[in-house]
Image (spheres, rainbow, N blue to C red):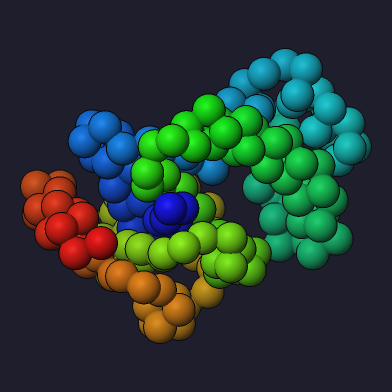
Length: 184
């Protein structure tokens, strides 16, 4: 069983995946894979070459261009093949483990929900999400940019099989995860 964990920026997807991992479930994080791709010099070089970007300040250049639709298409064409290949490789190693949880931030935006058996949406109000993201050292502009690129939470709730509210403590989030696991 493939279960997608999704939510808007700062909702707590990563915290959910970390806790599920502590509970010994197999989890695959798109954000972590992409981070690893950029940290691997050869892969980063291949991606940046496809984007016509130099290694110098590449993260800032990518962020500065995220609202440019043509650049976004090029970015997806450059990154997604590496991402999907890595996910496939990781998942094939764990086929006997059930279920496998996938952190997929842009699940609905990229129309990927059909690839999963169930969808868990992590919901959190915008004030909490913004506070969490800013605590990571990310700028307000970046938060606003990423939040704008994502589908409204109310629509995502309607498209999801399960919703976990994350407006409180990490302990409360973990209790809600355990409750959900008992219903799946």
